[in-house]
Image (cartoon, rainbow over all chains, first blue to last red; front, side, top):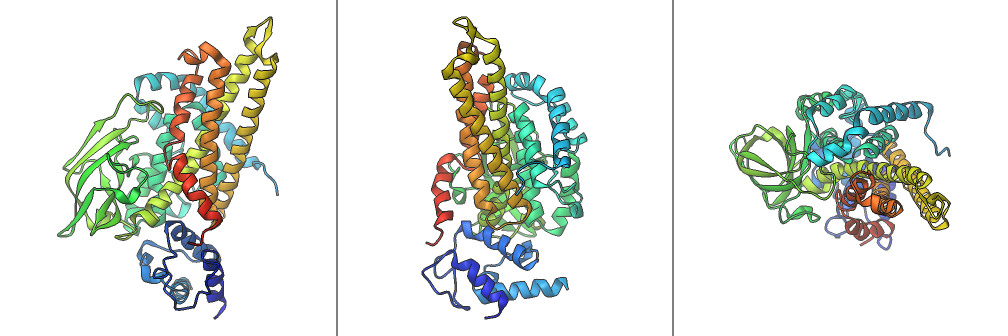
Length: 81
Length: 377
C-alpha cells in the first residue's frame, strides 16, 4: 500500500480494531459504516489530503474500499493541480 | 495551549454584547409574551451582518471563524433564545448548502441568505418522526424534470416567516434533502402557538400537497439526506444550540448573582447564606465548563478536525443540561419572584428546557456519545 492507502487504513482501523482491513475489502458489506463514520470520513479525507469532497462525489462507490477512497483522493488532487 | 479569546474575538464579543443589551434583551420578555419577533429585529440582525456569518468568503459570506460564531450565538442566547433560534436554523440551512449544495444552489441562495433577504428554516420533524430522522414519511416522487413533494412537517422553527426550507423526504425509498421555496404552490403553513419555551420562534406546521420542485433543488444526492445533509446541518445546529445554552446559563447566573445581593432575609443578603453560595458556586463552575467545551468544539470545527463531530455533540449535551440545571437553580434562588414573569429567570427556565430536546435530545446524545469512544461495531 502507498502512503495514501496506509493513512486511510489507519483512519478506518479506529472503527474496527479487531479486523485487518484489506485494500479492496467492501466496508459497507462488512457492516462497519454508520452515520457517525460518514461525516468523519469526509472530514478526514479533506483535512488529511487537502481536497474538497463535493455533492457530486456523494456516491457510495467512492467510499466503498480503501482503494476507492484513495482513487477519489487522487482524482480530486489531480483536478486541483 | 491558550484557552482564551484573541483580541479580535474579544472585540467582537464586546460588539455583540452591546447590541444585545441595547436592542434585544430589553424586549425579550415582550416577544416571549407575544410569541413573535417583530420584522424590525430581523432586519437589524441582517444589517449587523449576523445572518449567514459562517458562509465562507469565496461563496459571498463573511467567513466568520467558529469561535467568534460561538461567541455571537452565546451573546444572542443570553439576551433572547428566540433570536438565537433564528440564527441557528438560518445557519443550518446555510451550512447544508455550503457543505453539500450544488454550485447553482450556492450562487442562487447563499448571497441572499447572507444579506438576510431570505430566511432559512430546517424542516425535518414530522408528526411521527423526530429523533428517528430516517423515519420521515414525506415523499418526493420523480416527475418530469423535477420532483413532486407531499407530506407534513411539524415543529418547524420560524416556519411562519421563513422563505427557504431545507426539507427532508423519502425519494426512491431513500432519505433525500430538497430546498423548498415558500411561494411554491401547494405549500401552506399553520402557526403553532402555546409552546413552553423559545416562544417567539414562530414555529409552524407545514402542509405540503404536491409541491413541485425542480431537479436542481435536490441537495447532495438521493440517499444521502440523513447521513450527510442532515448530519452537516445538525452539527452546525448543535454547536449553535450549545453556545446558546451557555448564553442562557450565563444570563441565569448573572440574574442570580444580582438578586442574591439585593434580596435580604434573616437580616442579611441571601448572598451571605451558605446554601445560596453553594448554588452560585455550582452555577459558576458549570457555566465555565460548558463554555470551554464550546470553545474546544469550535476550535476543532475551525480546523476541520474529523473528531469535531463528537466534540460538538459533547458540547451540546453538556451545555444544554447545564442551562437547564442553572436556570432551575436561578428560579430556586429567586423563590416566589422566580416564578413570576416580572423576573427573567422563569423565561430562562422555560427556554433552557427546550435546549435539552432540540438538535438531538439529551437521550439521543447519550445513545450516540459512547459509540464515539468505542466506535467499532
